[in-house]
Structure formats: C-alpha cells, structure tokens
Length: 138
Image (tube, one colour):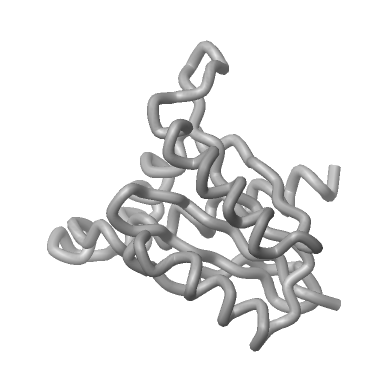
C-alpha cells in the first residue's frame, strides 16, 4: 500500500503529517518553510509511495471559507498541476490548532515547547490526517 500525506498550510511554514504504508496511523513528519513546500513534496513523493494528499481546508464557524483559503487555492492548483496523477482532497481543519495545543498540554510539554509554532503546525497536520482517516472508516 501507499501513504497518505496531510498538509497544514500556512503562509510562513507548513506542517506535514503522513500515514504508515498500511494507512492506519497518522504521524507528524516535519514542518517546512512554505516557500520550500513544493520542492519538499516533489522530492518526498519520489522517495515514498503516496496515494493522496489531504490539505487542511480553513473554514469559519458558519461553514464558509476563511480568509486563508485565498492562499490555499493557488497552492492546491499548483500541486495538481505539478502532480497531475495525485489525488488531492481538502479536509475541514477547524479547531486543529486548538486541539494541537491541547495535545501538547496533555502530553506534558513544557511552556517553551508549546510555544514552538512549527511543532503546533506539525501536530495540526497530524490531527487533520487522523480526522481524515477516521472519516474514511465510518
């Protein structure tokens, strides 16, 4: 089988998570500067077999796209152009940052570690991926 990769897209940096090849467990992979994201993804899909990429879809409470969607749409279009055979899906990412902070608290991370925005982005990508996996199982 192949992996599923998740992206928590940000203007400065982007969190990335990936499943194991059996698509059972979501794990944080890394955080990369957003301007390096496309190069990172193109290299990664050459090294690892990736079935699909899920991208966090920022929505407001009323279910409308949030302000950040104006940055994500061009990225997704570019991703589909560079990887035309790759399945790309948008996944609701509401509350992922809040859940990431809560996971860090629950995990006993010290305040300094919780302030690491790159770690928050990576955990957010993992939460996006985990919610996607759970939605597929239902």
